[in-house]
Length: 344
Image 1: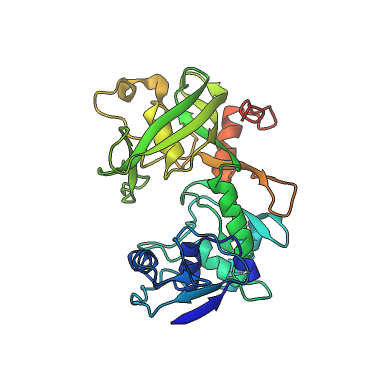
Image 2: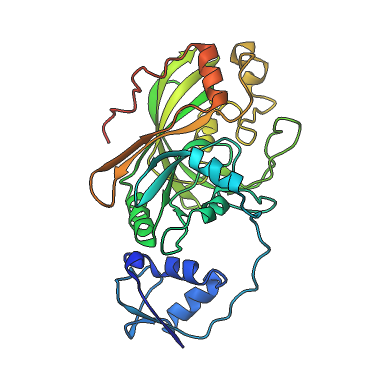
């Protein structure tokens, strides 16, 4: 039996997240079992995995069956990575960082992914040796605002802000065609689904997970809601959308855009047009030449209460491939975003 004391920077953290940080080799199934059977206790009392920790509490942990270490999914960090990471910073204070994630850079490691922001953050430990941690995620090909916490306590606070939907996120996208009505709400159930993605530039195919529209009550189906507004358009070919996701499901905006018949331009996974879809032979829906076939999706703005008080409000600039498209189309980013002032 081991005993651990909850530190100041761990206060407010969920027990399962505490185990994930302290004992990453412990499987979730084993953790659930030892918690369910009362072998893990806080100050002598039985707990749940969702129990929130308080500074000074004692956590009693039984002997554990730890999984063998995974093959490293991160390449060795380099001074160049630190320089690149610092160049991404949009805002920084003693508690957190806001990064401008570039297109094509993964947020976390995975199969075949050795270079990612999570690994780069190891180069920025604080005075206590704690490395910054991700608060949320963006897809590899999505650019824009990414929030990072510098301490466990702030990570827990920010995580709760996201879970309670106090964070307001605004995305910009270029989509095929022009949605009608010009402003609306997309409310659908999403679930992981089979099926190969559409060919990506260069003829390769994306093999990552893909979300599909599901029915209410279906296994693993999760409700998802997005508000959208047309900011500008080149009718009938394409539109500039402002999007406000209420929920945060995997690939939510990309799947929602495809579901309403207006996939995001440059999306190799959710840009499919079936053989019997009239858009396939409609030259008016063709994307103009000169627009790069990279994902035209930007996490534009993030607004949320700062854990220390006040409001954090950070905006990311257009990435180069989207700026090029906006310049070509004559879209003015200084104009008013119709979803920016919309009621919550």
